[in-house]
Each structure stands twice: as structure tokens, then as C-alpha cells.
Length: 448
Image (tube, rainbow, N blue to C red; front, side):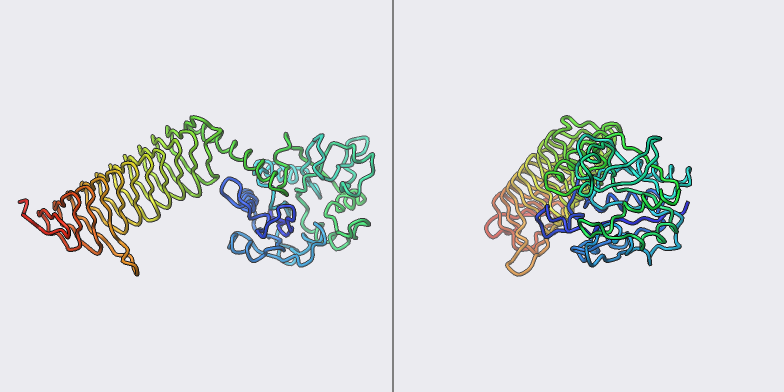
């Protein structure tokens, strides 16, 4: 089966009360529209068309080359929206999957079941339905006495008797490609809203004695679209529960799953322990046998095996293996820690490379620096990297010892095995194998 996908993402999202297009609101760290795009990709969609309207430029910038974009200039209903994709897709597939960009909880497995049912039965239309006592504003599925689908009526158009129907339309369909493009232009506007409803195609198919099939969801959660901030919060809660359940099944320990906030694209190795109140964001990668938290935040960072990060913040940083950080430390963008580095409490590292077995004491700041292997940074030592106009580099050699409260005024270089005395202000290079002390620091003797 050659499958193409149309994702509807042109809605105004007025109930969100935001300038941000609704489909760009994040759920578990990922814009909602990406869940639909990823599901289409998992189904092997040959072409994916995103129908955009409000905030089209923002959506294009976020999605990039993951889809072809078509514009729905006027909001004239779902049938009109899908029709905008005709030029991009007509004749390019056997089946067209139509779905919404604001249903992040819809599983790829459900869409595979939908596509499979459509292919097996040779149906003209196959749709996703759900049974619920809550209407949620969804259309009602109309069936005859034999259970065959006869149509869909939108809630705003339904009679009181039809409103009592508990089988709801989820707005997700597979259509026979040629049939759909032939019939979409035949839609007529509704009497009450003047919109062209995609659901009216079901009635057309029934009138022509075409096969209309359905698959029914096991629960309501997958069917929920996000139209309000409250629904966004509920989708976030459900998605994080799914993520946490999957991780625990994969061999990761979450001490308190209710307070483990882990984004959808995070990867974690086996036997890692996530302590309470820990936030793992973006495209973070964490190795095996680590311990993270409690009260830690890691964003878009790479953490190797056997690392421990206690009550600290790590962002856009790389940690190799066997590293300890914290508590109460901050690794800022560009921090790179080689194997066996130890970062104490209340330390800050920014745009710096620390070699193997470097030890950074508490209350220290290392910025725009290179620190050689096995060097020790004493408590309170800082690199003075900003001169008011530009950032300058500090280079510390291997096996150096930087005394407590030393100020390294960049640009400056500390040689291999050099030492500075406590409280020194170093504004000139210190040669290898020497001791520098004072304010400003001066070399007082060679060490070898």
C-alpha cells in the first residue's frame, strides 16, 4: 500500500489564548505537531502534507523539511482544508491518511491498525472511533440495525436523539486516494456553520454502496485533541506517564515516577537511577549505571556511563564516564568533562574543557578555559574571563594546583605542574614547575 498523509494544522487555537500556533505547544518537550509527523513517518508515509493557516511561518520554521506545506487561507472546515492538499498528493498514493496535528496522544500503533484494516478490507473509508459517555464536542457515528456505518453527524448539527449516541468520531481516517479527490469538490457547506465537513464523505460513500470500515480505540485518551491549557496539561500528564512506564520496562529505576519529568526524546541506559524531582529535557542522552538527582535538571546534554549528578543543573554539556557533579553545581553550555572528573558543590563550568581526573573544589567558576588532566582547582578559585568587551581564554596545564581563592585574569596560561598560592591574583603566565603567589602573583621559586 502506497500511503500519503495529510495533517491538519491550520486551526486558530483561540481557546489557548496565545500568539503561538496551537500545534507548536510542547507536550513532554516536543511540539505537538511532531507527534503526528513522527507517526506518519513510522507508517512509511511516502509524502506528508501539513495544512497550515494561523502562524504558518512559525510552523514551517519548526517543522522544516519533515513535510510539504499547503496553506488554508480561509477557515472553511475540514473538508476544505484537506482539499488544499490535492495538488500535492493526487495520484501519488493508493491511500491517504488524514489526521490532526493537535492529537499528541494518538499512538503510531493505532494508526498502523487503522491502515491495516483499510488495506485488508479494501474499504473506501476507514475511520477511528471511540466509545465515551463524554461527548467532548465530537461527531456521532450513525449505524444501521446491522451495525454498518451510515454516516457521521457533527455535534453542532445533531438532533437530541443523535446526541445520545456514545460512539464518537475521532477525526482520523484512511481514504481511497482517487475516490477522495474526486468527491471532495462535491461537498456542500453546512446549514448552520457554512463549513465543508470532511465527515460528509462518509455519507457519500454509503450512498454509493462503498465499504466504510472502522477501528475502535480501547480508551478515550488517544482521541483527545488539545484545545485548551487544561487539555494541554492533561496530555502532558498522560504522555509523561507513558514515557516513565516505558523507561521502567527498559530497566531504568524511577524512585518516584510522579516526580520524574522526562521528555519524549530523552534516552537513558539500563540500571540508571532517576531520583525524585528530576527534569530530563530535550535530546538528553544518559548512559548506564548513572544516578541523577534528586532535584537535578539536565537539558540537551550527553552523560556517559557511571556518572552521578546530585541536585545540579546541566545544560548543553558533555560528560564522559565516571564523573561526579554537585550538589548545587551548574554546568553551562559548552562544558566538556573528561573521564573521572569531580565537580564539588556550588561550582560553575561554562564553555570549558576539563581533562581526565580534574578536581574542581566548591565555590569555583571555570569559564572559557582548558584544564589539563589531573589538575586541582581549589575552593573559591575563579577564571576572570570577561574584560568588559570580550571573553578571554584561560589555559591550565596538566597536574597543576590552583590554590583556594585564586583569581586567574584571562588571557593567562598556567604551565604543567605549576602551583598558585591561596588568594593569588594571576594576571601573567605562570611557567611550568613554578610556584606563584601574591597580589599580583609572581613566581617565587621553581618546584623542580
